[in-house]
Image (cartoon, rainbow, N blue to C red; front, side):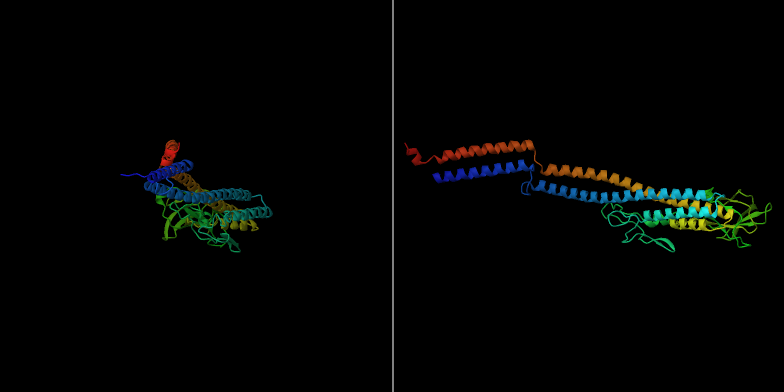
Length: 403
């Protein structure tokens, strides 16, 4: 086979260019720290890195949604805490209003205080979330969710809660109706209250307490009526199941003595008059906080009430305030549990992100020690190619004949 000088020159230049390209690629890998810079470098590794990068993107999107949810839940939890503090002030004011030595003027002053606290509570119920919405707007509202009108405060939002819409579906808002308008009435199982005297039509001379459950297994969920007959010391009581019409219990009336039937117990106190009547209704989940406060203000502003009326009104108002506070506290506990869940989810997402970052790094990152070694090898090869080319370049007849 015949080899010409031109062939030797071409082969040397091709080898030199190839060495230069390999050294340049090694230098780029070393500079970027990436073993796989294009899919052609390693199709399998590039696919692994792409899948890991996509997973990291999903985790980061979920993290943003989680941060938004945490912000909303943190603000809601704080608002519910503020609301409970205000209701505690209202409760203390109602306890003071029960003082029998207070005049109507003093009670009107307490009513004004409760009215101011009620307005503060309304501001909390309409508290914005800092992102153009409201914490208690439910599934969204462009205006404050609670509207104050002559008929009272009513929920103007959409029941439910806005979710982030991702796989974990993080909550962004709290159901305002559940928080502010769906506390349990009465003591949570039944509701006691006065009825007009069946003979005179006036208010009762006695008053009834909030009652308690003595045996949950005996609860019927029916409604009852308690009638007082006669006068002391010969007064008696009769309990009728108004749902079925059947008599339930009867006995002599003694002020402050418990009346028990069908797993429940309550006490009627005071100088009961013939015809005094009371009812017992099943508890429902529709107690509205602002209705309770509006009624308390109206009662305190009513002049010339008897001591019995004041005692009965204050007892029922305190009962409803306690129920409202329990309802808010239950919602606050739910929000706190959601925050705990967010913390757990964030930890899980951090682990998932770390795993995918490690997977992406393993697929495309360069082993720096190996990269430096490869670059040095390519540099050595390139130097050798340069020397070889310079030697070949001098191998011609004219240089040989040159003295």
